[in-house]
Length: 508
Image (cartoon, rainbow, N blue to C red; front, side):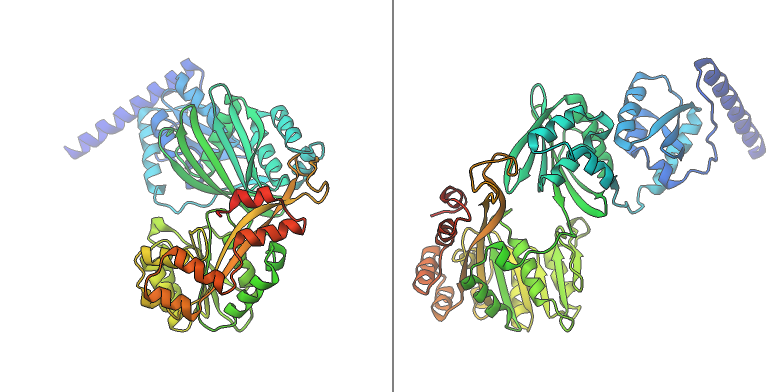
C-alpha cells in the first residue's frame, strides 16, 4: 500500500510540473523546478522572508547583481511592483521564472533553515572616487541639495551620505510632509535643511536603508531600529537607524558614527586649566568613580574617551562597555552592549570586573543596579568612568539617591563629577559674519563648557543628610566651583563663541 501511495505522489508531482511547464510557456516566462534545488543562505536572504512569503516569490540563483527568482504568479502586478522596489533597495536586477506551487513551498521552507542564522552587519560601499566626484562641484548644503535632486534614484543614498560626511554631519533626518520629504543634516548640534525630496525618491532610499539594516520592508506602522555600515574610501562608518510612523509616512533618522575618528584632547575640547587639573587629580587615584553628566548630545562620551587616552598605558588593563562603540582605541578592550541578548550595562559591568581590569568605562548609568555595582567596584580598587543624565554637577548626587543608590556607597567612592554642554564655535573663516565655509551660520565646530565638582568633607556631610540640589550648589560655589555658565562667558570673552550660544544650552 505504501508503494502505491508513493507512486501516486510521484505521478501527481510529474503532472504538476508538466502543467507548470505549459503555463510558463503560455505566459512567456522561463520555467524552473525547484524541488530538491540546492539553495544557499546568501541567495535566499536576498529577498527578506516577509517579502518572499507575502508576494510568493523565492530567489534561487544570483551572480554579479543578477538574481533569478521564481513564483507561480509571475505576472501579478503586486509582485512586479514589489520586485521593482526591491531592485533599488538591493541594487540587484531580478529575472522572473515560473514555478509550481510545490516548488514555491519547497523554496519557502528553506527560509526556515536560515531564520536563526546570525545576521552579518551589512556594508554599503561608497568609493572615494565617487565621493570626490560628486562633491567637487558641491559647496555648501544648498549646493549638495541640488546635486541630490540631479542624482539618479539608484545613487541618491550615496549622494546623501557623501554630502553628510562632507558637511561633518552627525545625523541625517528624513521627515515626510504632505507634498515632499524634508531632508536635514544635524551639524554642530543644530539641524539644517538640505532639500525637499520627491516622495518616490525617498521611498526608494528608505527601502534601501531598511534592507541594509535588516528591518521589515513591508512594515510601515510600527517603530523599528537597526544598523549597518558604510565604507567611504578606506573609512568605515557605523549607521544607527531609527524609524517611527508619522502623519505623512515613516520618519527616518540615521546616526553616523566614525569609530576610526581621531580622539580630541581635553584642551582641544575646551577644558580650561582648572577643569583639566581637577581631572588629572581624579584619575591619578587608583580607584573611585568619575561621573560625567549632561543631556544627550552634550559630548560626555567624547570627554571620557579623551580621559581614557590619558590613562591608556601598556601596564594598565582598560575595559569599556559601550552602546554604541563610538571610537576604536588600540590597547583597550571595548565591548558592545546588547540589551536584546540580556547584555546590558549592569550585567556587562559584572562580567567586566571578572576580567581583572584596572579601569572600566561604563557608557551610562541608567538604574540603581548599574550605579551600585560601579560604586562598589570603586570601593574595591577599580577606577570607574561613567556618564549620568543630570543638568549640573551638583544635581548628580541627589539624582543617584533618587534612583535608589544607598548614600553610604557615595561617600568615599566618588573622585569627581563633571558636567558639560557643547556650544558652537565661531567660524574662524568669517568670525561669525556668515560665509560659505560655515553654511551661512557663523559657526563651525563645537567647544565644551564645563563645571567640575570635587567631593569635599562638606559635600560628604550633605550626602549623609541627603541634601537638596540647592544645598549642593551652595556648598560647591563656596568651595570654588565655576559654573558652566561662567565658564561659557569666559569663552565668549576669548572670542571662541557667543553669549547667545551659552544662553541656549545652559540653565541659569
